[in-house]
Image (cartoon, rainbow, N blue to C red; front, side, top):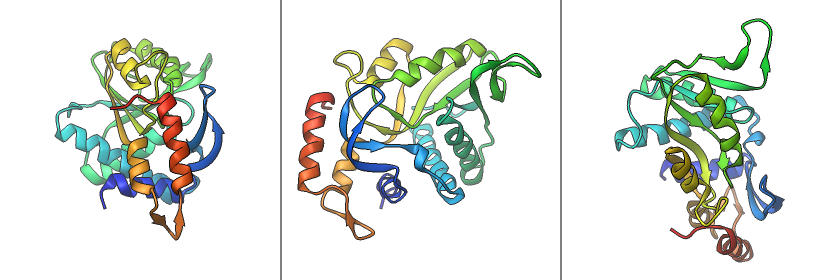
Length: 229
């Protein structure tokens, strides 16, 4: 089993990948939802970091992500534990000791002050953003200016759990819009197509998450909101 298939089963068993009736941050009614806030244990967050690390290493090996990354940035709030766990996993599994940092929702006006916690970015740094899921790209557009205002940094990539492959503000996917608007590529561990193919009529711990009825609902949603590629 590839790390992608393992990751999909891991999300389902953790209750992070769920199926039913949900509303996304962008207001879309969806039959599937990914909520990384449902990770609750030390074992889960440690394993999650390993999946992010595997994705990062894969794209460093292919040349898509530069090998001289300085730090991982986790947008508040859900991105914070993701960046920390990914940095820890990269050190354990690949011997890469990267900095990590995240932003505050409100700028601190006492003590050390500022909006950044952890590593303080410096001019010339190369920083990967670590996020959970992109639907319409709203969260990234809100947090990217915070990172870019901290220093003159390069952002060679955004690493996420799942690419929902959905249209953003126009006919492009949110990921394609982010690359167009900011020049930043996005690297998902898996896509919604991977999820459909991996779980359709297959048991995970004795449970079938995607049967014929759920597949039909997912495909109808994808026909409406997703870009086929």
